[in-house]
Amino acid sequence: QVQLVGSGGGLVQAGGSLRLSCAASGNIFSISAMGWYRQAPGKQRELVAAITSGGDTNYADSVKGRFTISRDNAKNTAYLQMNSLKPEDTASYYCNAREVETASYRYLEVWGQGTLVTVSS
Image (cartoon, rainbow, N blue to C red; front, side, top):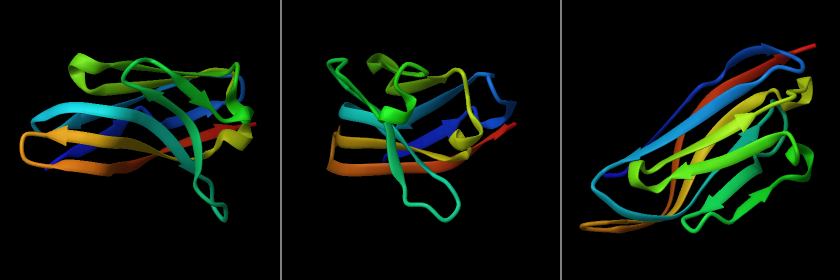
């Protein structure tokens, strides 16, 4: 069974930085794409950033130039470096993996638990 474990959230002042990590485990052969979504109270979950196994990236307009997603394919781990944080970045951040190939099964989508990011003004 594939599991995603996200970590690195916390409380930071506006203008500060945080780095989120998402580690996938479970006898994985490959992962097509990994990414981060976020959900603020009363709002829908939205894509923050995603990266393919080849390194292609996609960012929400609201985080372009401030957030950087990267990935270590050998470790099945993705990272989200968040700089110049704003109070509106406050949300629970969820790790996501798509097309996860294991020895016994191909998962179309796997979600990790949320990690809370709080940015104070």
